[in-house]
Length: 113
Length: 111
Image (cartoon, rainbow over all chains, first blue to last red):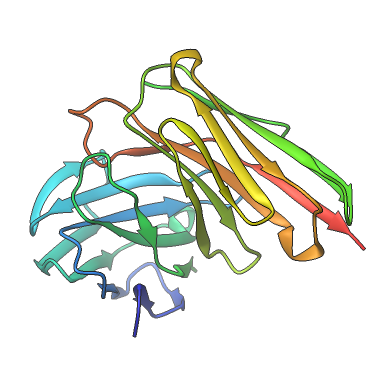
């Protein structure tokens, strides 16, 4: 595997379910990010991790819970989501978390029913 | 916060035509990237260009940081160039990692 990978690529879940999104980067980077892209809107930053430490939480509701066990892996745990949370969730990584080029995974398309 | 404005919002071209996409931003930046989002949602890095000019095949980009704008040039467009082009900026050294995206330019190249 190369670059940034995300699983699953598609997810349909009910509002009472609990699921997790996984991101893995194979670039040797130290910073990882979660972005959300709702239909017909630009990407919005959700969380930033640098060397496994969270450096940014962009006022994200607590039903989204990130986890970064090491610099290569990032998870987004989902519980009791709302239909308006349906979106494309994109993971990215960069060498460091300031002024470095960010590389994106293919995204997970989430539908909440 | 910093504002990022892209123009035009939509663009339809005939295959072989050239185009220029513009990105204006409202404050000084340490990072500026251009992306192409394909129909499947994948963001493809085109340029990392906080200042200066770069070229990659039929694509080139110029950022004039002092005047707070960046341009993406597409020459001899192909149908595979279709998709949404995003400009994204990172403001200031203490705003680490926070890429702010513009609304995008949706490009459609007709055969």
